[in-house]
Length: 172
Image (cartoon, rainbow, N blue to C red):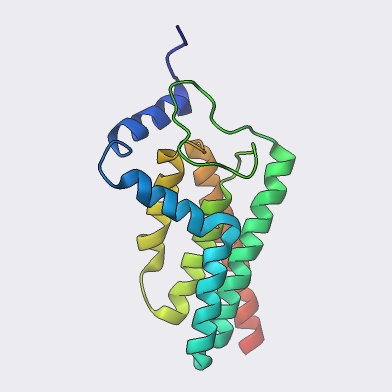
């Protein structure tokens, strides 16, 4: 018999058994995972925004650049930290991943940067609407520990801040 999950493994099992067991949650989490893969969904949205809103083009392009930079930062950090993804037998892995590395979550990183930066041109409360669902989806899917996701949010927010400062410097 396998050991009972402890610590972050226990948190993942709890999230999966409560949220993941609800109808429709897994398909939505998988769709979010595919959308956020390599920040491609965010790049597409930023590109569309830049095309349809010429007045806000620089803001949309900055959001795309920020999402991509955040993803790249996460990949570099993953290769330095080399934390493996959750692998306790009680944790269901509900989506394929491009690597075995876990810390930080690149999905949480790029989503946080994109949400913060897209809030500017859209005027919408995107961070509150987008970051928590993407963060939870990584846990429901069993591909990240909670600290991976939290670190991803922090890195994404830091990248967004750098991009915002660059935008402010370019407009002054």
